[in-house]
Structure formats: C-alpha cells, structure tokens
Image (cartoon, rainbow over all chains, first blue to last red; front, side, top):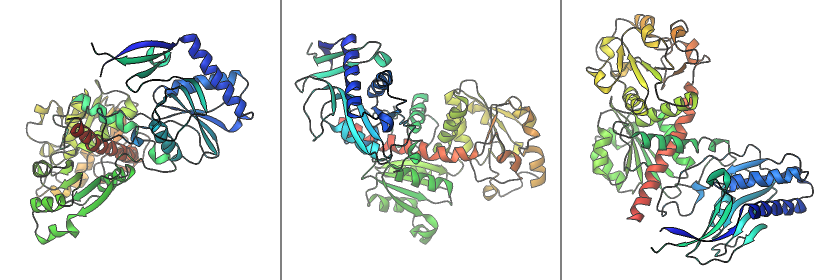
Length: 183
Length: 312
C-alpha cells in the first residue's frame, strides 16, 4: 500500500541528540564498558549501532566492538510475507560469549523482529546479558518485549508507519510518521 | 527474483536470477562459524535426497544444506532401495509424493530425468546431476567461487579442460558463466568435445597451451571412465601428457589464475597433485561454497514458492 509523509518527528539535529542520549544511558548502565558490544539489526540498526559506538568512544569508552545481524532466516512470517526478503550477511567479528550485548534497531513495533534477533544472536553463543536500544518505540507490541534504551516514544495508529531515514542509507537524517496515501 | 518451481539446469536461467542465488548464498557462508550451525528458515519442511547414482560430495552437500536450514531430510539411495527391485522412476516418484515432501533433490544417470520428475510431482525438484545434461548447483557454486576470487564475470577468461563430452558440470558452467558475461574456452581431444558445441557461444581449442594462455580461471574436469565404452584416447599416459594440468602447463595462464575441479579427481590423469594441492587451487573452497549455494537454492525455491502461493 502506498504511504505518504504525515509529520516529521525528528530532524537531523534531534536524531544526533537522541543517539547521544542513548549512548550516555548505555554508559551509565555499564560503567565498565570492557565487556560491552553493540549489534545492529539490518538494515538501519547497523549504522545506528556504529554511531552509538562513536559517541561511546568520544565519551571515553575504549574500543567497543560492533557487529551486524541479519534476522531474515529467523522471521516467523517467512512463508507468508509478500516479497521474499533478501538474506544479508551477519558479521559479528567477536565472540558474544560472556559479553554485555546491546541490540540496536531503528523502530520497535510488534517486537517480532527483536524476538528473531534474540534467537539469531543466541545461535552465536551465550552472552552474559542482552539489552535492547531503539531510536523509536511506536507501540503495538505483539510479544512481551520492551526496550532498555528508547530514543523517543511515538504513539501511532496501526495504519501509520514510522520511517527512520539515515544518511548512510537514505542520504538524510530524519524520522517521519507516514500515513496511507488514498489518492 | 528466482521465480520458478524447479531448478533443472542453468540453461535459460537469467543473469538476475543467478546473481540473486549467489547474493543469497553469501549470507549463508558464515553459518558454520556459529555455535549453533543452523538457522530455522525451513523448519517443518521436508527435503528428499533421491540419488540413483553414487555420490558422496553432492549428496552430503545437499543434506548438510537442508539440515542447516532446519529442514527434515530423507536420504534415498537407489542401490539400497526398491529401485533395485525394479521400481520405475515414476512409481518411485508417486510413492515419494505420498509422503508429502516439499522438495526432491534428484541425481540420475539419465539426461532429462529431473525434468521428467518435475512434470510428475507438485513439489519442488532440484537437479543434482542428470546423465550428461546438467548439474546446475555445481555450476552455481563454481560461479560463486569465481566471484569470490575475481569479483566480476565480465570479460573473464575461463578455460574448461577435459572430458567435456560426458560432463554435465561443463554444460551447466557453459550456460551459467556465459550468461554472466565470461568468455568460455573448452579444451579436450576432438573425441571428447560434443558436436557443434560452439553454438553455445564458446571457443573450442585442442591445444592445452593455447587454451590456458592468459586464462583467469582453469577448470579441470574428471575423465569419466564409467561413461566411456570405446577408446576416446590412446592411453592415460598420453592423455596426461597432452591434457593433464601440471605446473609447467599452467605457466602461460594469468599470474592470478585459479584452478578448479568439481571432484572427484583422477590425480595424474587430468590434474597433477602439484596443481591440485598448489597455491592456485580453490578446489576445497568449491566444496565449502557448495553447501552455501545449495542452501540458497533450497531457501529461494521453497520459501519463495510459499510466498507466492499466499500472495495470490
């Protein structure tokens, strides 16, 4: 169904502030970030995780490893969704065993992506702890999943969509609420 | 997007489809490095491996591929089954269908067997080698290996040396690599080159030195003694002398040239150990890539199909 922009929620500066705040909160919970690692969920969670790590390092944390996780093969709707999703590479580059892993995603919605990400991550080993950081929480959970670090809570209707746009992928930093285009 | 029920050959498979399989396979390469070496994508699906010809590598590769996708696998070897009691392929197929598999992998000594089976069953069929016709997943894993090493296919000089006549691997590679833009040269004694093979858009060269000159990829093929009833060449010694890959013969190839072989190898016949185990050889990488490529084929066929059914 075609969607059109309804409202701009965050602009470039606000996205940067939000990323900064999430990073500070992570550091507050992990005063000793030696065992910390960030894992971005494809697609937009990956550049977000990299940005958070950059801020963490600017705040004094030493080299925080950052990985990318593809959850396509763990989806619970593989056999029902309209388009066959492209399988992307999972590149962790570090062992998750015993680590404090923060999963990073752009939008928290039904919680099903996070469920899939948890299953995917656990197939790589046994982290000491897994937390979740999201840029936007738009509600409508279908599973008992909550974020530990939330950039912005945005109440939406089910018909709306939240679109996170990032420079690395979309050429601009912004968050939009989209609505159905009936035209 | 791979939009087909079966994978019977690479003839007629488009560039976009091949690239989609190769791209998808990339996402499967890392799975053996995980603590849990499988993903749940094909949970609840059943894959039947029906092998009417002996095979270690391909059957194991398909079985591992299906298992790493969490599918249930049933192995079925002709020598130890009702086929040895005289059951026809059609009857076997009907009986297999009664067990409701989602995909049948077929290896058969007759060209066209996979095509025949695909017209008789409603599930997916993957050709794992039919007679001297095609072996598409071998062609795909060779393309995948070449792309890993060379980056792109356009203008790449690929030389295939050996028993082209009996080789389904050669046919799949000719179709696949030509579609992807590589220039394919075939090299063998005239008795082992199929008639009018030039029509497939390849160059034929009977001198190994000329065929290897400047090549980016040299692929040796197994001399298929089991399919040879007459004398195709005077003696193994003479064959090795004229068409065996040795370090000396490889001198004319590009400095970065890689050497491939679909296996199993006849060392000292089509390839010398110094080449098979040498620094240019990517033969064992072909085997590991085979699992990832077969996972991609199973995933795209089986999951893609379900997707289309519900979308309709």
